Image 1: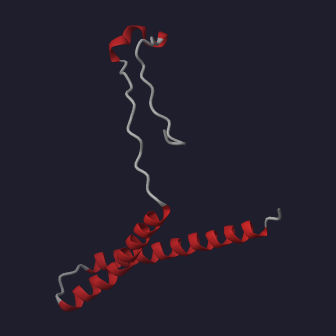
Image 2: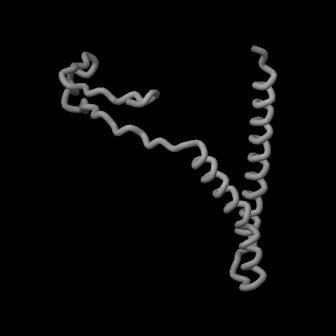
Image 3: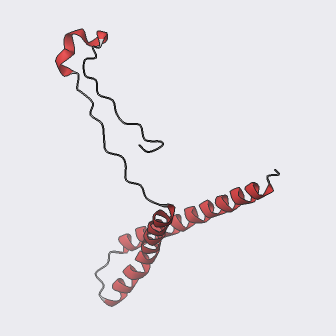
Length: 109
């Protein structure tokens, strides 16, 4: 059994006094499968790939707009705003991680 995984318990034979008239509506809980484990490296790689796709989307849309003209300007501006916001959030998260690392290094044992 995995640490941090709490299986759901079966309610066989347990009577709830608060639902005396609703005994047929109480459902039995069955144990669930353990959640799939992923390592930090694959999670970080997937997140960075999604970041790269989101950031490169406005460039691809601009290229399509200039060559084919089939891209709506509003969609292009929305994609650009999403990319700017995602870069800003990523920069802030990276700054906080570096600050946390610096604080860990300053801990005296």
